[in-house]
Image 1 (tube, one colour):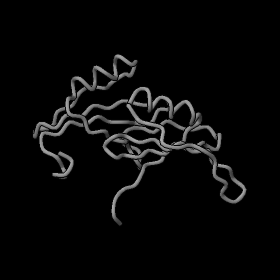
Image 2 (cartoon, one colour):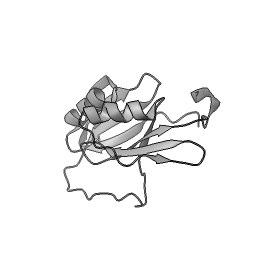
Image 3 (cartoon, rainbow, N blue to C red):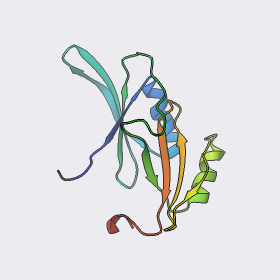
Length: 136
């Protein structure tokens, strides 16, 4: 494997969720359309951030969902690296996003959790030293 290429989120309203990620988090719509796999049509939106991250938003099967708790098994959250935690939290709050309590780790790393309109868990992370030097 070379690199994590994208993360996919299944949405009840993919058009609206893609718009939210663009308006609120600064993603750019790269492409959208429909693909047919067997007898299933899948609507997709590919979004990108200037740092190279890709997010794919797909339509759901329409079945009711259950809210995932923070410690349920499976994928927990999608994290976004920020340069200024306070400014990033303020910018999101000004756009109506409710940010959870700011957490600071002993090494100075700061974390803040929030949810998108479809209740997916997202995280802002500020690091005093990058996990990978090329992310600096």
